[in-house]
Length: 69
Image (cartoon, one colour):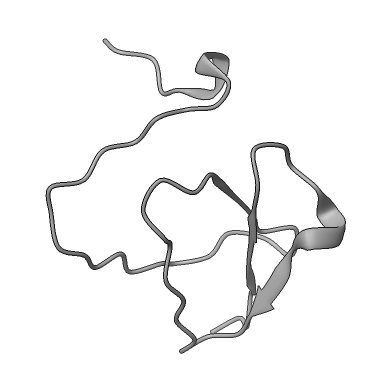
């Protein structure tokens, strides 16, 4: 099993300097209403997302939103 890291940063614009590296088994919280961004430059990562709803995703740049089929 590879040890790919998940990187998270907070803000409305992607900034590599703000990324925090999370190793396998790590966890973090996302404050409500705060924009964030993620990266996996080492390759694909498997991530478990757990939360208490309701929840929604608002994209700072609508072009990054998944396309509806």
